[in-house]
Length: 376
Image 1 (tube, rainbow, N blue to C red):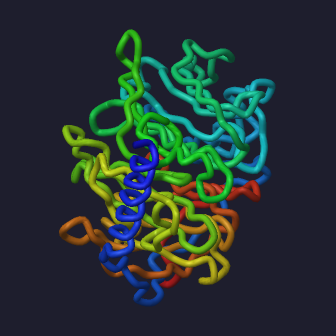
Image 2: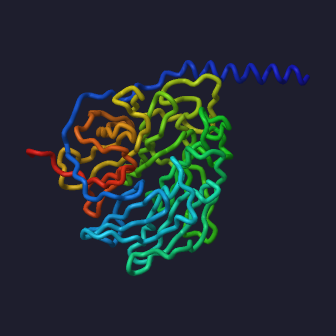
Image 3: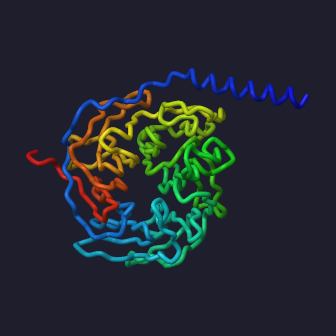
């Protein structure tokens, strides 16, 4: 009986693999040429591996920056102020360090914010901090919210953001190693390789899985007007992908496919959890296309200085500094995918200033601002 059960199990796995091989995913958007919707100008330099740049609610005219070794810096009126130095609590590596920040919806009045970092053991930590009236931060967390063991030093994810449901979201990579060797991304009981969320206003916040099948989500962005999320998920050896996913929280977590698929390419020997709907990427690019190697997800532009960018999603590549923009289309697809003329070396993050204008963090130590293209 045991031998028969093993044979039946092997047949079931083989059948599942054959079925996945026969899937016919929709073709991702193709690049349609170049565009010159904006230029970039450097507005700060000499930072230490900045991985995030953006505006804090209630602090107009200033930019906040995360430095990967563990510092939060404020840039305003030509001055640079260190708001927090937690480098003694942070392990910094190629993909480890202080990786994410999110401001509570009531930050302007309460000073509540949240940080994600790699602790001295290399494991994931998320905690709540408090800002003082002068914007400096209390040096120690108010409370710890999450600790996750990390088996490797890469694929830590990093993004923290509040969603349209006012929950705090965190993107976690699959735990590292090539081709998800621990099969975490397709394991619904494991937080690695997932997008997770928690109600931080609850007395005892509980993290719940929202999306599965992620390899290393390096930046995501919510579009509250359409109730969806855009994700840049870093690929393995060949394909970088952009995902556009509706937030349907009353349904089982949707599955972005890793490690059964890299982009739309089938990976043999890797199975797919069938607990949620499989969602295909809307845009991909290969590692041979202009030297790309690691996607940096972006956002849909909503500022006022760049008319050619209105309602266009912008994203780029860390290695090549290439920037692309595209427009959302019906049925959750995209169109008019174009390579922008502007380039940001070592592109680590795309954010906005307090006016909604695009800002970019470069791992080389610089911050850039998007401006109207020359001659416009």
